[in-house]
Image (cartoon, rainbow, N blue to C red; front, side):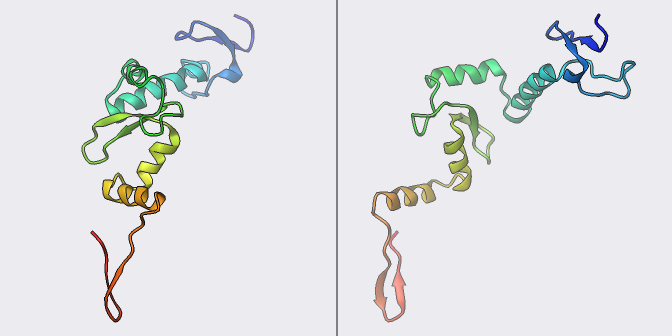
Length: 137
């Protein structure tokens, strides 16, 4: 082993110490796997913990959507979308569409009003008496 290098058991590569996190409890003071392997494992652990999905299951969902976002049908599908009340995974979206749903608090009524607004059909209150307005349903 060259001086200043360590062998990673996960990827089976010899890497310089700069590619390792520090671990004061280890005999050599470095983590047991390299930074890249730890990051990869961290992403896999997050998917499983947060959504109950393996990377293979997520990849199969993306492939079933032909790799594109289920809402805009243009951008790459990279972010798992789920129902915040039930935890059920709905699909894989692009960053923008996933963030938009979050900003609308997953409320279909608000999203429908936003679509009507964009289409120029914004609601207009009706004056029913002086100072009294009725909003359309």
